[in-house]
Image (cartoon, rainbow, N blue to C red):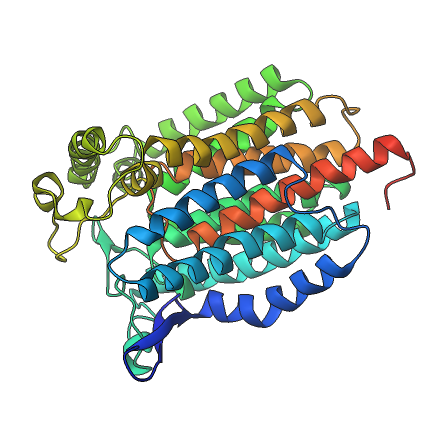
Length: 413
């Protein structure tokens, strides 16, 4: 079900306590107990022990303090609750729970399995032109501002249970990144490729160009960090060129090429909107450079960007952070991902090329870089931030595992 929310009613002067959606409910039921148990274990790395921890805590502290700019104390406390539940908790559990190679395999297998099934559902939606979940949230009395049917060049953009095509494409791309590791210890057979085909089908059905770019970036980074990178990259370029050439000779193929980013002409207004948004946002950011503004959406520049739905769609997570929390918030947010990517790059390249632990590092690095690219064209809505904090947590857990293996080398299970 999409991450639609419902208000938990309050009493007296409090209209409602919090808005609760499905990811938050799962976090309360699963991650809160897991986080508590992890915090009680003596061998659990304390929060704040790694450079990534410090950057994240600094970012959370800044955002929490800036919540006080809200009109009342209740809104500020509510914002702090969302911040802990949606940022700190998933990061903490993901960065402390996996301790061995097998733990990472289980987590990634669960994600890929769910993403593959979702890919089949998405393909069905596009083929049947039937958005299966479009009326569910309304029927249940939940609030979800991204429903309805979205099309591109006469095709339905599938969203599945994630409620939005961009979110679906994002999840498919991350699933592909995880699959790259899972297939590393298995010979290439038809069975091992099935999950990839299912997720690729879901990605195509979403018709979301930003996640397509992210998936390509994930594949390229994984190739570039492996052996014979130049040869494999050249082979990939040749195959892509041959594929595009074959598509160009048929009318259906030309229609497919017209959907591609950078070369396609369909929905060019989306690219124009993003360029205009960046220009307008930079003007607003310049006036509130260091700490951002709580009412930036009310500025004339942002009001001029209102779309047909009556909203200003901040389709760039970095711009959203800068508008909300200024240059300081953006430096901490971006610095968190840059620091993790650099540590992963340094760590995986020290390992033997055929080491399974290095395959894991390459897959995590590729997925993290892909996420960093994708959120430059995505708003942090739905499960998007929840998933990137989880992936970042897995990267920290991987670095901690390598550190322990280096200090006490034993065969990885």
